[in-house]
Image (cartoon, rainbow, N blue to C red; front, top):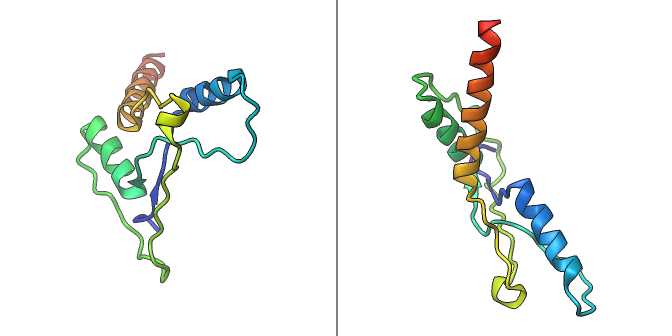
Length: 110
């Protein structure tokens, strides 16, 4: 379902959070949700990619499944842990697209 909203997070932020939690001196246990705290739909991600590429192509949406769109968002108490993600997912997507576009252009020159 392209309307499902998911909490995307950059892998560098995931590694940073795990490292941060492992360094804590207090004995902590449990399940820790690591996320950006921001939800984006697959459609929103596609629009960011399209915009970054300055594409005039249409985004084709398959018909929605009968399920109700879901929304997920990590609930990490940033004040308690004094950690939060550094990389905004929208800028991460733009950087990945720009990197791939540059590499694609370099490959075409060969």
